[in-house]
Amino acid sequence: MIVAERKPLAEILEMVKDCKKILVLACRGCVTVCSAGGEREAEILGSLIRLGMKKNGRTAEVFEGSLVRQCDREYVDAIDQWKGQYDAIVSTACGVGVNFIANLRPADNVFPALNTTFLAVRPSRASRANSVPAAVTVFSI
Amino acid sequence: MSFIPDIRLFSCHYTSQQSCAHEGKELQELGFPENVRLTRVPCTGKLEVATLLKAFEDGADGVYVVGCPTDGCHNVEGSQRAAKRVAAVRDALQELDVEPERVNMYHLPRGLHPQFVDAANEMNQRIEKIGPSPF
Ligand code: SF4
Image (cartoon, rainbow over all chains, first blue to last red; front, top):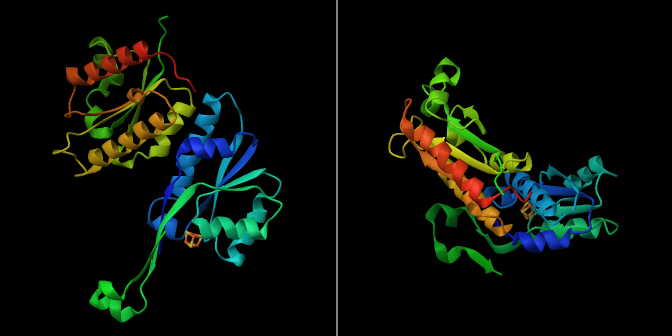
């Protein structure tokens, strides 16, 4: 499970300031669960980018899409459905998803919209049932 | 410079039902400003942050929501959820360096009553003072 939060809007607007066609790409995995980067949050971010750019005297076509996960090759291939429609992807996935897309698509501009703040796994179902906090492996970054 | 603000109101069916009866004639007689455009929703809890932001994208200078009193919502927590989303829009406006007062939440009882009109006039005056939207 990964937890993330949106970067400050000014930072995101600075990244995309010269872009003309922006795909805000949601991830329907972990970041949907923590309400940071699912379809709902991507819709909000798309709106905020449009408003922010307009306020800064810039115009861009901003639209939203989503992938089941951004950390699996089979799902990342689905980006092809927007081929030619964007000159930048603003990903609302965690750092894993953003970097995976950037690696698979070196010709694309891929920008991260979130800061990944926490990741953790439960090593076994038994520990889950007993809720033993000591058995939870936690990585804080 | 004075201007006529474009104000969008989202109100729940229950709070605005009587106010909107007879095609809003009584509302007009009570002095409800003509530049406030009302959209009725089944419950304000159904409103999304994106819906309120879209109103600004659409040219609104000010946006406000009128829902049930917090302790007497027809759908229990609907108006409390709406208040949280309004607060999220305020934060977002602030991040964009735009006056957060351009968005507001009111909790009003059902029925045709002066507070419904007062809220509209208050928003109208507030936005007149702040000025046109920077978007
Ligand atoms: S890309 Fe990140 S947020 Fe999305 S499913 Fe994979 S690990 Fe979770």
